[in-house]
Image (tube, rainbow over all chains, first blue to last red; front, side, top):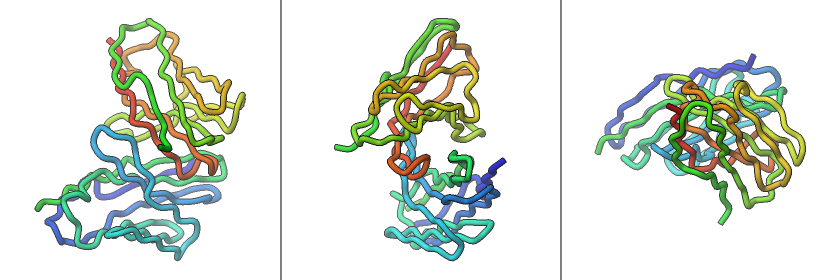
Length: 109
Length: 112
């Protein structure tokens, strides 16, 4: 059974204070690891796909990296508008997407 | 504008009263899916569809039905809702199988 564990559950940062969100996973036949952002009361919004260990993707202040067991979402110099819940998901050989429970990020001005 | 729409957005109903939540996408995506999101449990897949007339169970299908008669529509049916189906429901679609899904705005369902 595919599993995704995200840590910490919640993270509070000061504006400009860089940090990383962790996603640990076990999957049978990784087809991809996905990061989503979810704002309160809205549906998740796709951010990144990572396909193989060593791959990195960047978008503005966000950078996602992947190893064989973990993915990290690095947030550089965050702003209050980066506050959201960040979801990690893995796609396996069973053609399903398994989500973690998410990390709620709060960035204080 | 490319989007996934869901209706209704909010619904309060009583136990046993059949209901349907509609989902429509305008991106010509083949893959569509339904999820429920509960505090502490995260997003869990209910049903998915790889294409028209092709549907399959996700992780929590009990108490739900779906149909896919047209490519753009994927309604979720609760034939006899119960209070444990109170949740936030999301429809999603993709042109890359179950990956890189576009999500709808959500339907908050309360069953009393």
